[in-house]
Length: 357
Image (cartoon, rainbow, N blue to C red; front, side, top):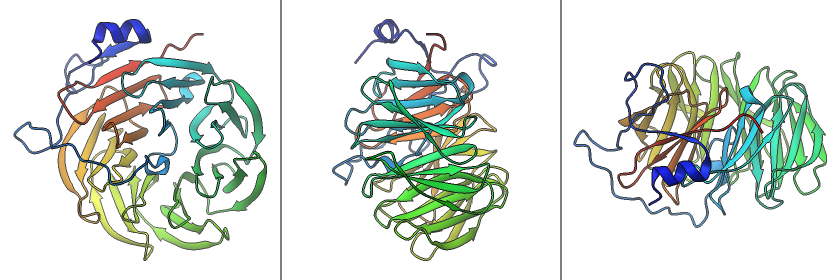
């Protein structure tokens, strides 16, 4: 295993280890914990039942993974930064300063392009995943906040928060195909590539809208908790998990009936959310308590609480790699990403990305 000294030398980053929230005050530390019962043991590794890592199974922005290389792409709004990291070690491979307010990033594997929502410029920056060099800039709606790629249909969907619209882009040609209106304040967007359904949270309307990806017609508008923020779709179970930041809960939706099956109290200000496509774990970033809660979702509608993790920063972006069993938590307001191994005894690592060229 790579030593911490070697990792520091290679990455020129700050690796911060092993302290639960509360120790050392506001210092750059990260808590250590294990998933499982109170006996401190790790569960047996779970073999993914999917041949490939489904990029839509994770938070489709903020922190996104390349399922082929395992590299991590992170857009840091607070620092006008786009960075590529080694998903196993945290080594910084490339970084690029981007003006315009990079809110979220999405990777299109087929074309090898990284799309970045630029909330201040009403546009998308398009970059090559090979070297992070710019390819072009695309005009979209007002204040694009989040975006997601459907690798099956080769469509990119952009949620424009400022004018309540969704822009649809062909990832092969980068051509804008259409823009359609949605309910006010579209905060986050995710899809189920199996059913070709689009899910959008409406932050101030306390709702989630469901759309047909083929016809772009609205199927349902579902009431959820207060200020729904990020959401995660598990295509394996056709279940949608919605983090309601103001009500401290997660709404659990059935994708077949478009109905709320359960409301799960999780804590203070749930933000980033993701899970394991094998249907074993749900991870919820808690901005209010600087922690990551962990849930067993063997029963997708009735999660059971497991031991979680303390963090040194909020986790608006959360991602999980079911092949390497690595969990990621990112703070897009700052320049920090935490890597949390889910197997073995390795400690979490927090990477601070340099903000100067």
